[in-house]
Amino acid sequence: MHELSIVKDIFDTLTSYYEARVDDIQKIQVTAGLLSNVQPVLIQNAFDAFIAENTQYQDMEMEVVVNDIIAYCEHCQKNFPVHFHRFVCDCGQASSTIVQGNELYISKVIFKQD
Image 1: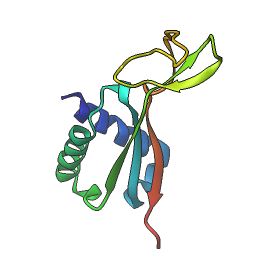
Image 2: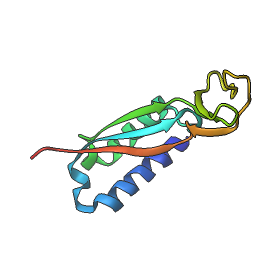
Image 3: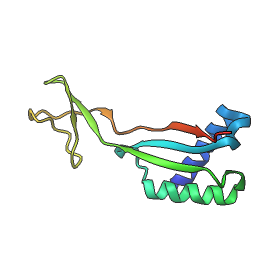
């Protein structure tokens, strides 16, 4: 279950970047592309397990936003959505240039209001 190591990496990043304020984080948003091999339900379960063991984070929430796959067509010079892992533009040209869909990052951090 690589989701637990991803959650640990998220908390390592938050601790490194926000240091003393990490306990004041109310909610984090993680953006995961469909090609990132991250399942929202599994990463949420890993997050819940992590905060159960690390009670200082028990009030923190996590939201996972899933990005669709977008590719770029060299022939049309346009972006197009990839459906059913079929990397073919409406013009019929195949493409392997991925514009969106393989990312995994912390997209938002919300702090508690004083």
